Image 1 (tube, rainbow, N blue to C red):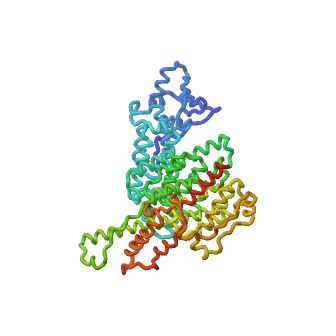
Image 2 (cartoon, rainbow, N blue to C red):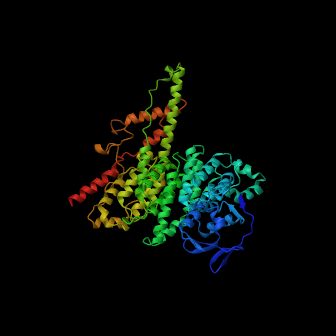
Image 3 (cartoon, helix red, strand yellow):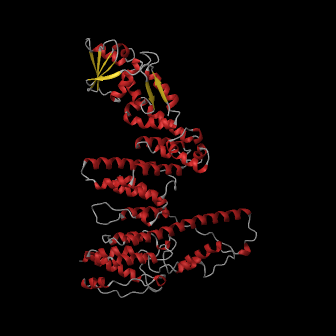
Length: 599
């Protein structure tokens, strides 16, 4: 850390009966009262020769042997005033990154400019600030952090902006050209002992070497600094994301959030703490880079949990939901288990926000490109070079389409696992369970075993739920037992109705379910319940062969012989699709509504 010493005389300030004075052969003729409390017995000559403000105040006040001057709202208090007074007397003072802001604001308050005397305090402080403070990484961060005590004066003097510009320029340069940072001062010795290398070379390999140091800044200064770094466009998005994770873990720990929840919500301390954490959270969300993968999906979901706890703005929640939907396949079931703190419902988990995320995810899906017409192999022996290029581009588009479909398969597996967890919540409304299950299209599931398992868990908890939903539950159970179970035999017996639920249904005057087997292929399906696969399949009777031909054409591109057999993976997956409509869930709600209206 750089420092500067001014003056050569020894310190002769002392305190007598709560009054500060300086030892001198000349009697004092000036009384200065700082911030209405502390008093100083000083001399006019050394002070007025360097401070234009004191000259003006002495001229305006009545002349007396001990003239009294009031200095209200003095920046930095008595410490910074005494620093300026010692400079006027020629007493040695030491300036560093820790006190330069207080000294600079105090000198500005006293108007210690070059117009009063050449080489005055403001000039010396500016030279030290520009030549030493702004050139050092560690000093620049400490100085910037200290501006929060004098926000208005620091802005007016341009100190805050100059510090931010200096820090951002250092982040964009080669780390080996920057002096040691806080983080490398802490960890550098361990790295040296472990790898026997130069600390500069160790730091140069880490693009985010600056993240831990900037995490010491308060949120408003950190936000402005990160905006300056991002606007340059030279730092990778994933490095920005890593820096945000470090800052969030530093200032938004789980313990702090838990303390907020344990405090009385009506108390002033709880309100203050919640407001600070809410501002911090929303600022971090606004800094997340737009690029996909800049931060992990798990980190985004943790931020989403924090928005629930801290009651953040709806715009922040929607922005997180949109970002999470872009990389939802990376999430785990535990990530999606967001606790609900709403007083409007008794559900343990916030299912509504997950439904919004899934809606955003489905909006991202696009219909797969239509296969171009394929001619027989004997007519393709003399294809032109351009035709081969077109075919290559088409295969590349198919690969991206396949990747998109694989993402849907992962998300479907994730949603079914999530359903199994929330099904254990006895307060979960059936409508929300159905909404989550229907949010993923049926053709995104290779099998329905996990969905059946979730339904099984839900049914076992049904006796603990409100009896008011028996009518809707009956329709739901009817749908469940009529659905085809292509893989059920491999994973054990599919759940029959629990005996206690049968008794409850009988008490409500509801007959036992009669249809327990899958529907045959000749079962008549209403027009509004027909399958809709990306708009390509509208009727299972009239267009079923079209879909089979499309699958055959797709597999032909991957088959070296160009012939599709009935053992093809896609053909098997198609045959395993349920024969019942995917919109049956939607019918349940409408049937229940019509039943309640009749009653």
